[in-house]
Length: 527
Image (cartoon, rainbow, N blue to C red; front, side, top):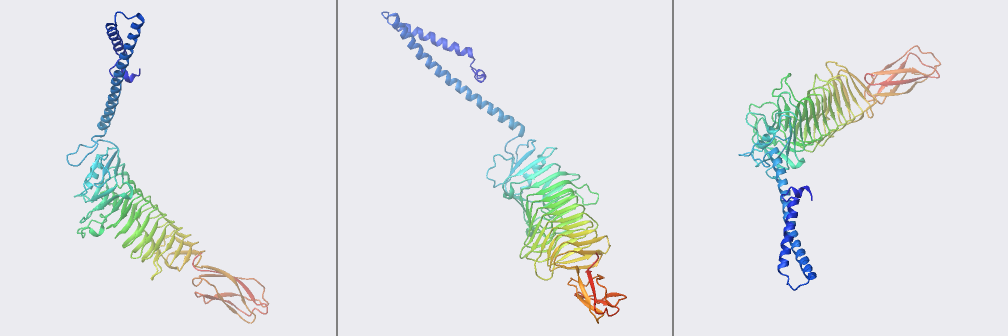
C-alpha cells in the first residue's frame, strides 16, 4: 500500500482487523442459519458463500472510504500550495481603494479598465487617472527593481501635481512594458508641463520602456503659461535638473513603442548609454526624438510625419552617437524644418543607412554641426518642389560618402575651419555643392562631375584651343602634358578663360605642321 494511503488515516493493520472481524461475524451468522440436519459439505458451502458476500461488500465500502481520503488529501495539498503562493505574493487582486498592500515580487501586472480579464492582475484601473495604479505598482517594486506589465486596453494618463509626469519611474532596474500596440496610454486633455512617462532621478540606471502605444494628445493640452522647456513629451528621461554636472541616467532604452502627437518631443533621453530603437514615431512641434549626452543610438525607427514638425532626429549636446537604419517619411500635408541634426561643439556623430523621403517640404535634410562625423550610405530623396532642401555642414573633419542624394543643395560653411570636409563616391541627382567657408574636397561622385580628362590639339597655324571640360563648375586646377614633339619648338604654354563649361589652352608660338597635342586633367575643388 502506498505511503499516500497510509497518511490518509487508514493504517494497514486497521484494514486487516476490519476484514477479520467481518469474517468472524459472517461465520457465526452462517452457523446459526444452517439446519441441524445439513451435511458437513452443505455447511462448508453455505459458510463460504456467506463469507464471500460479506467480504465483497466490506471491501467495496472500504475502497470508497480510501478513495474519498485520497480526494481530500489532494484538495488539502492544493489548498496548502495556494496558501503558500498567496502568502508570498499577497492578495491576488489588489485595488487602490482599501486594497491589500502589494506583495514584494519582481513583477506586477496592471489591468486596463477594459482589459479582457482582470482576475490575474495586481492592480485594476477604472479608466480615469490610470497613472495612479501604474505608479503604485512601480513604487511597490522591491529595491532591486523589477517589471510592471500593462495589459491590453486603454489607460487614461493625467499629470501628477508637483511633478513633470503622469507615469513616474524614479528608481533603477525597472522595466515598464505593455502588450504591444493593444496597450494605449493617452494624455488627457488640459495638461501643461507633463510628460506621459517621466524617468527622473539622480544616478538612475537600467530603465527600459517597451511594447506600447503612447498618444501625447498635443492639440488638447492647455496653452503653456510659464512653460518649463521640453517638459511636455511622450517619454523623457533625465536628472531633476538639466545642469551640465547633473547626475543624469545611464542605460535607458525605449523600444518597440508607437509614440505620436507630441507637444514638445516624443522622446528625450539625457544620459549615458541611451537607446531609441525599433519604434514608430509621429509628429512633434519641437523634435520627435532627441539624445543628449552619449554614447547612444537612435536606430531602426520609422518616422511618419503628417503635420507640422520641427526636427525629426536630433542630437544636441551629444558625443559618439549612432543614427542608423531609420526611415523618415514626410507625407503629403506634413512639413519638417530639419530631418536629422547634430549640434556644434560635439563630435563623433555617425549618420548612416537612413532613408529620407518626402511628399511635403523639408527645409534641411541634414544639418551636421559636429566634427569628426560620418554621413554615409543614406538614401535622401526629398520632394521635388522648389526650393531644394539644404544639406548643411558647418564642422570639419567630416565625410559625406556613398550616399544617394537627389534634389538637394549641399553647403559647406565651416567658419572655424575645424578640418577638411570630404564629399566623395556619392550618387547625386539634381544636387549643387557650394563652399561658403572651410576646406572642401569633392571627388568621384556620379552625376556630379568634378574630375575630367582628355586630349586637345593646338593645330598648325594656331596658338590656342578651346576645351569643353564637362564638369559641374569652372575647374580650379588643370594639368597639361604635351604628348608629341611639335615641328616648331614652343617655349611655354598656359591655361586661360576657365568657365563652368570651357577652358583655353595657349602656346607661345605656332607649333608648325605637326601641331602640339596636350593630355589634360581638370578638377573642381581641392583634391
